[in-house]
Image (tube, rainbow, N blue to C red; front, side, top):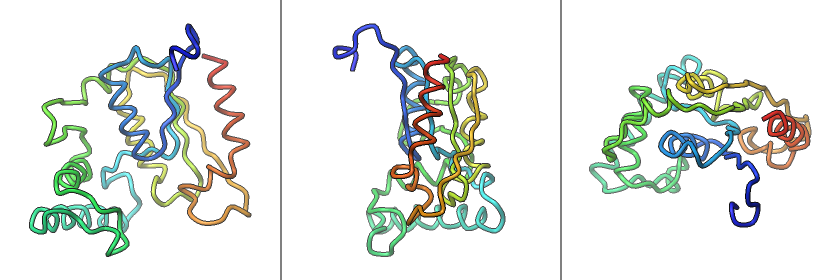
Length: 187
């Protein structure tokens, strides 16, 4: 991107886990973007989910991590929950779900201080009705960005959006595209 558009400001746009990973990346390499757009990107801390789903998140991820540790991986496609994930990935996710911290057991990095120091404009988008990234979860991630200038916005999808609201914005994207354009132009 830097070669194709030299001198143009770059913005990271991440959805869901991609938003989490992009934010963690920027906490280490803040010079790589002029801002970030996080669409349906929650912290997976169990307290960000409404009760009783919050307890289901907490218990479910701890059980999945324990199962993966014994079985060697988590067969998510077979049980139709998550994907086929390694024991390490499930252990890392279970820790974040339990503690709310991005102190990843498989990494020597403690990402929390870098997240707090990140000094960029951030657009944190919640998709109304998205059960995989509820408002509390999205706030859970954006609240870690205490040095950033965070703008929260709720995207309301049309009634004709089929399937999961978590992915519905991909096809019903006109309002989001306009909001991102205005956010980037404002700088």
